[in-house]
Image (tube, rainbow, N blue to C red):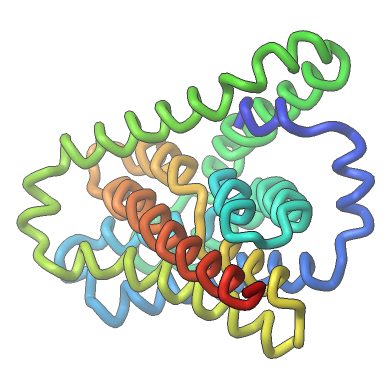
Length: 269
């Protein structure tokens, strides 16, 4: 989150004030399609029969905002990078309120969800570091310029370590849960990518904007989900779907990048 803040300036927020129709559609899908998918897939695969906390973890990551990796994927897929960045910014700040509320709404029937505590944690994990990065970048531009080339790498390493730690600690749970635990995050992200693209096309958006919305809806901030899960459901398997989610959305995003680049090159021939 600090690394993301270091890439932002106050000008970005002026751009957000003029968020185009495509961006509004994308953010709406982010917080409507994904949470509903997370809840529905958990019910369909009966994750609560294995462990209710697996369903809670899936819902939590589904209620998270788009991940910053989506901006890189949008660039590689020849989508609208400016729109991708704006959507990431808007969904990240919207998540401060929406992630706790939506998690409480969808997962509250399974376990007791402390929405206020989740809100406080999201403020600490999202708002504080992003704002700090923004201030550093704005008022100490030389420092921001010096750190910016390294922050994406540090961010990636941090997320990989979080994911690896969760998967390593919960290895027996993952192996013992069978195909349902592995299928649930895969279906979540396939649905997000597919429905995001479909909704964009239904609104007759341009191809590059449809790709952007697909990417933003399909790629979640799994690192945030894992951090919140570990903090609010300690000693449970809630972080596991978040960790598996991080692997899946990167793999699916990479496949789509290859497909879309191939289509773009074919059309230019």
